[in-house]
Image 1 (cartoon, rainbow, N blue to C red):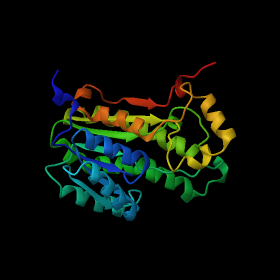
Image 2 (cartoon, rainbow, N blue to C red):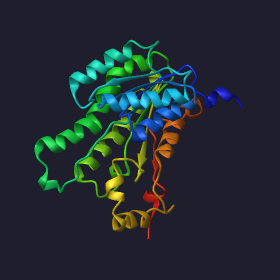
Image 3 (spheres, one colour):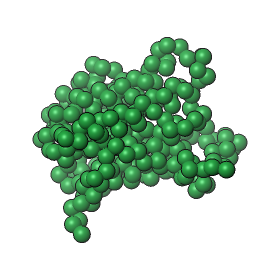
Image 4 (cartoon, one colour):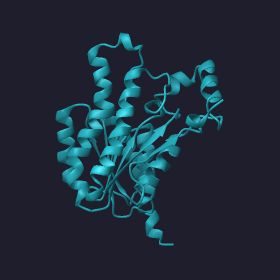
Length: 258
């Protein structure tokens, strides 16, 4: 076995939404495999905290951060300019930034549901397009989109979130085919409930938690590190023949019948 197939040494990764939760766990996992990591998120203070924490554990790695709201076109462009200043291109892009405002379909204001699409789908599409030249430079690059089981089946997130994640999954398939000739693999992960700050309020409701666990064959809530492990695998040379795939990180939720 060639151990280099299970390493990311010398590779540069950009993780959006990288200051906390799943994004920070993904950054940590990629660093553990030897990559250098660029973090982007809206909160500059949280970014600095994440960078300091990661540098304590990986002092030999390059870790840099840039405060930007990837839902805003001008800030996406600024992020692109910043990334272009690092190294010789980019090897890995993880489109993890996302958000939601759960409401009945008829109660969304136009700016509310459009904003969900902007952060969950349009930002990933635009960043992937903008960064394509940097990724294609190596002939062996990887994009991983963080989707959701809500893009594959109905859950209680609200229709706008589910629609945006379904679009992200379809974008993954289309770009995987279109960019295969450029040496860019494009995959996705689809988490179910993961223990993060964003899910803590809902999971604090005992009745709601019971409902979630009853639909989860493994009988527990997932951890950010478990999503990060799936993302890292899709970035490794060992996964070099995997593209256009969506891996559910869901404790069996999507496979639960009756």
